[in-house]
Length: 287
Image (tube, rainbow, N blue to C red; front, side, top):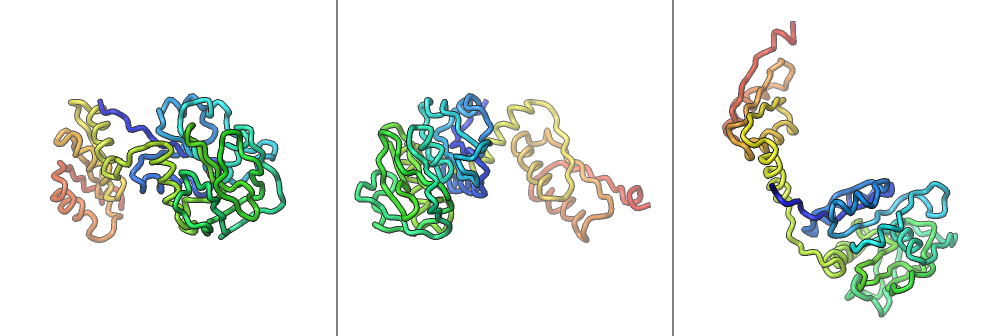
């Protein structure tokens, strides 16, 4: 059996950027998965995460019924990074203060980096343009955290506690509008969470092939090949895993684009070496 890779979990609090955060983590050569904020902490920890990122979200931490974070998450020895709403949830759960200041910030905003820039923001300019989207603000950091940045509407715009492997930012490092955003994210992943950048997209193929091989064993496999991308990729992965144990079936129903049946019957088979059974069912579908 293959050994599952430890993921960075991106906990989605309704953010439009949750998938983008996961993508940026992968661009840093670290494997990531998006999970809902409703997932129990025990299930998150069962995934043996290398780190957890709390995403932004449209709610206010003060609204009744707004998404919350289980304080048990912070009892676990897992590196945690809060972004925007996730930053505020983290601050409040650990004893900091989140205040409806009435001075929300939206869009491109100057961020003032303090001289105590710490690990996360080290070597950044004294002022950096970042992307903000918040109404409430962290006004007091939790005990043990060092405040490393501020803005006009966020007295605490970044904080960190490297000893406990925790950090957070009010802005969105995952978007292109934030200068040095990817650098901030990788500083958390590499320097605070201590993750080695060893993952590449090729790992997805290797991991899936191993899982398929384990599941199939010495059995035979049949795959319905439609001519579309999804079934073609699925068949290619299974074929890489089990070879001639796979037989694909392609039904020509007469409703494909001109030349597509020939592409499947000739080009796809030539490229992959897959065993293919072709069924000409045009009369049955069109009569």
